[in-house]
Amino acid sequence: CLAGCMQDGTCVCSYGWTGSACNVECKGGASNPCSNHGICRTDGMCICDRGWTGADCSIECAGAAENPNHWPCHLHGNCEGWFINPQTQFQYGLACEIECPGGAHSICSRHGVCDDVGECSCFKGFRNKSCEVACLGQRDCNPATGCEGVCNYAGSCQEDGSCICEAAFRGSACELVCPPFTGLASDICNLRGVCNAEGVCNCYVWYQGVACEQIASWVIAVVVLFTLALIAVSVHLIRRWLHNRMRARRRARRERRKVRRTEAAVNRMKGYKVPIPDDMSMQAKGI
Image (cartoon, rainbow, N blue to C red; front, side, top):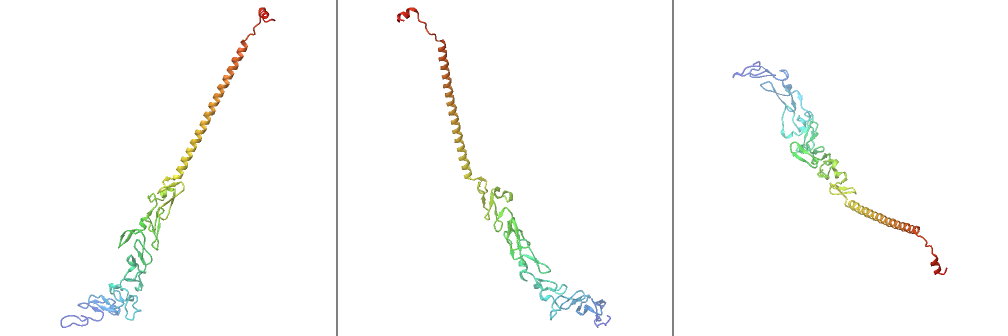
């Protein structure tokens, strides 16, 4: 009791001292307790005045000097170590002068987290400055963390929420798969056509079918007709060849018969003897 003792035995402490026995020095020192910006508690700790903080109330809160009533943080937040106003926790900056995108009542459109410089880190599946743009084709979503998949797991989401699809997918949200529906770029239309914006194959002229898996009907028809024509021509040529061969054989047989007849005639001529008339026959004929 450096300053005196009351009738009930309690102490009246000197300036800058506190405690039941006035043996505790206030923060900031006995000569400058609480930096003259607060009240010293019985344990020596300070309860700072409005707009001041720190163990000894020597730190002026940001924004307090600009406020005529020395309110800190432009009335948009709390000065750490001083007071907490749960209704004004939605603005950032050293003096809480920056409002988060989306506004105090819809921070980052409730789809992201606002950082210390007032910028949103959007959850998966959301885009734009205030995370208000939802990506198309969201899949497996959780309100607390966002969506695991965007563009139906088949593309990438752009800042405007639109999708750039992988090669084998079509549609605004990449919801269409090009035939034969394997999702592989190497299988699109079996490499026999082009997949259009509706996910339908426009086959090359030689092919047809949902995935251009069949030969075109007109090609088959042409091949059949050509084959039939080739068969017909072949049959005609074979028949002509057989006919000519038969004629040649008949001609050869006729020639051989002529030769044999000629030879027979020659042989007969060679064996023919002219008869010599005798005297009586000559007399009878009057020779």
